[in-house]
Length: 171
Image (cartoon, rainbow, N blue to C red; front, side):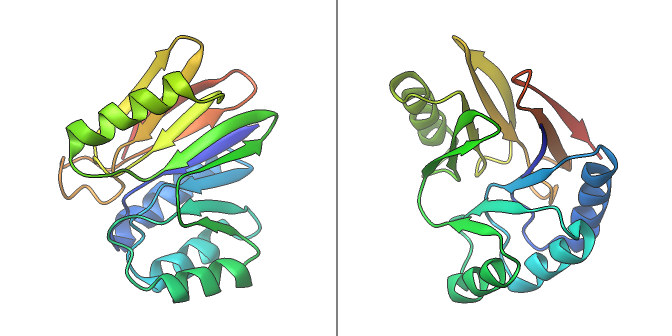
């Protein structure tokens, strides 16, 4: 199963459109958004571009209008997690988390969760930096930022849950 993974779109609609069009062209069956959508109109744009492809998202630290985000996710029959969550998709246990504090704190937490939890994949955002690595047999993935505001690079990833491999793409 191929899954698109995006994070930190921060209302940059033009780059989000480009990223989602590429994700769709790669034949994904599901999209994860790892937080910091920001405005509900971003979720509406996602629905327009993704059509019937489902989305599982997690609230980011900058997502303010949680009520409207939840309303739209419910309306689209998508899933929005408010707190870090372990979900089962494609026979894999996946930890979804946005992030906490700064880059170093988020990285320490991700490393601790990866070693201590019974998961196959840890997906996180927040730092705006790409992180694709293995810790033992577990895969850690931060697709970087769609918005391009911090790093100057807009990126997303495609995760192959069957092979437990991912590739990051720069727009």
